[in-house]
Length: 296
Image (cartoon, rainbow, N blue to C red; front, side, top):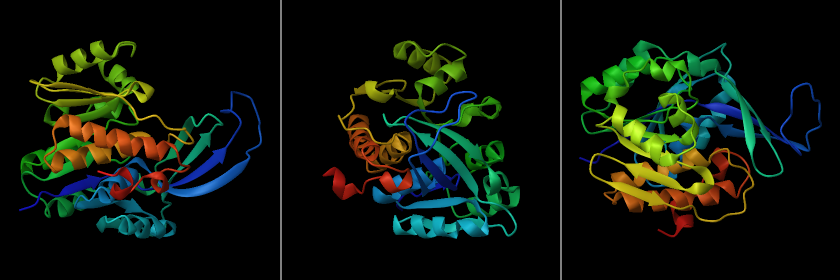
């Protein structure tokens, strides 16, 4: 039977303000444009998986005004049967500042993303079995319960610990099979300055000896490490317009490569190709390329 991926993750409406520079404390500046996009780390990663050709199911929660997010996911090939619509609750959203260099900063409002119930988790997990993949980020509640129940079912757990906060450190991280994280998040987990990628990798390997580590390093590419293998992947050069969904695109396409049976190097290469295309376009979910665009 073909393995399935369940992404239990966030669903946001992104309000993206195009600015000359990121606003500083006490400063008021005008925005050149305002665009509204489907977003949320969960949604973005599901879109990447769907566009990569993976059988992916998205679970989460939205308010009534977020129904267009379901349509967007379905257009990308994502199964949305496990998304709950909660009347009277606002869909999660993000206020994103995007400067002329393509860098951004983000304010999140959890909304419906923080109203996941144990009952929803139990009902959702009934549709999955040992060997199926579970993908998680840190933009929904009940993460600890989800991890525990997925472990009991024998699912393969992939965690992107973003945004990084104390909730991540309270999770049963020993159950995680894959960490996909950037150098800032790795440094926060280890409580070290993220100055040396090798040191971060070694620190993560020492603390989580059974976990496969994928460390993304922005313009410095990405690195992989497990108990027997190490790999390095450079980026594909691209004109940067918006980096919002770069990491999410990488995550989705990396998992797609692994599910297809590709070697780690091949999965990293496909993820790097997809991320390079994503950063060359504005928006989050809308910037993620299809498999055909990668030429692989």
